[in-house]
Length: 144
Image 1: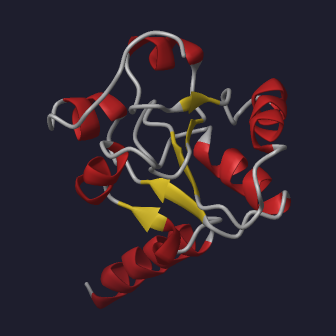
Image 2 (image 1 turned 135 degrees about the vertical axis):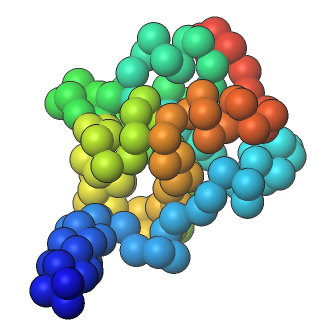
Image 3 (image 1 turned 180 degrees about the vertical axis):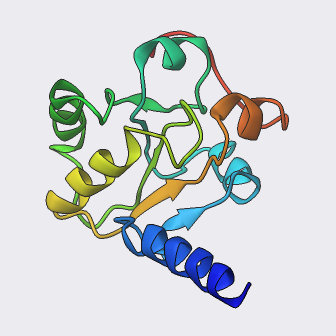
């Protein structure tokens, strides 16, 4: 039993250590929803699939393309090109459970590689629909 517990701990630690972000980079939906609802919030970039963005997205979120695709990273880079590197920016996806999300990790790395030090990630453990919309947090529909 002790070996099983140790193995589970090591697997969890290895997974957490492999993430490109730290705990300080992550913000939960309940903490970010009031920020997103106020004017003057940090720029928010949706790094998932366009069909989901068109369906529902955070208020004022900028579509930045799916981080899993080269064209999505190129779009994110073009969206960030004229943003000061000391600006706090917020990324989110919510296409699927975070452990399976193909978009957040590459997008986060790309923003950091561009020199952004204040990259925040809205952690949506299950999906945008479940962790944001169904909780009653603000959202918009359609293209920007």
